[in-house]
Image (cartoon, rainbow, N blue to C red; front, top):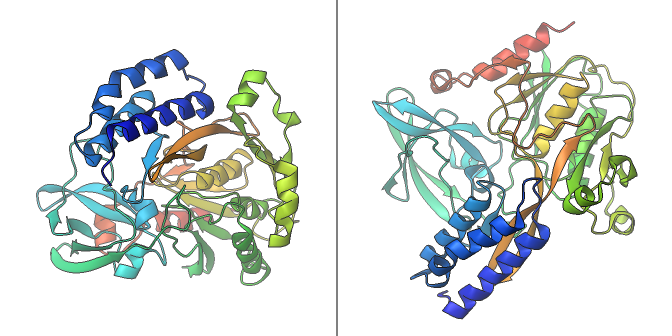
Length: 415
């Protein structure tokens, strides 16, 4: 759809108002934001095409904050972790810098296409793909498309043609393809292995029930546990159920601080408490009455009792572990419930809200920042592992996972 000048003006005004009223950042300066809008106004309103208009909007949003805000439409390319359930590293391959598949989440789009960790991305839709100079963002992908790609596999550089089939997103405000949320297995030495690829759903009822089934069944007597959160982009509040299986007690996890709370100087102890993910959709009306439209709540674990694996748990993370997955890792580390192994997480955990702008567009705006019960903010800081193990492209090419092996070794070394 080609927008008229008046329509572009309407969208810009809605963005200006939405950010002014909802955007949360301790460093937000209203006058600076209005100056940014004015500086970009002519390029946005007089854009020669839809692509130029969208690009001008994104540049304006980046001027306010390099991350967190975003313009969404049905054709907006999104991050590969959300669109194709995979993440990338940049590595040297046959004398060139290339994007290389790093995390390929089970049951996701890339996995279904036959992609493996260590595959080198050569082309997308027939176009050669090479990363720009650092810092190199990952290549975005549109959803609702079948996307042909070419990859090189193994050190021989054997080329394979594959097709990434992305579906329509379940949530327009947070578009993503859905991998298999939970997969279980066993690592050498009989170590119980839990791969969590996503925390699906806003409340996470189905996810919580699935977690219960694992810990009441296959892992009921597990005396060790390896949780793999690599490539997990986060998701909803269902991760609280998994946190609750890391401790026998009812422990404070953390809370979200929004603009209203910050301006009023409100103490977190006054926030409503969320301490159980419901296991039935019948509980939803009660939750709606209790929490309404509140963006600030205090999370507590569910006090599920002692488990054989308590004190013998390792959590595996990397630079593509974000959002609710970082919250889980931080909670475990701060309370000495698990050893964290892998590479440092990027520190991306804010609550976001999407506002309709009209004409098929939405604006995603950070509205609250997460703070742990011990007063630590993940956003911009990330989680530093207890044992740092960078991902090895060379090992992946040979079909080995060096980070997983290190995590298993660390777990075998725990008392």
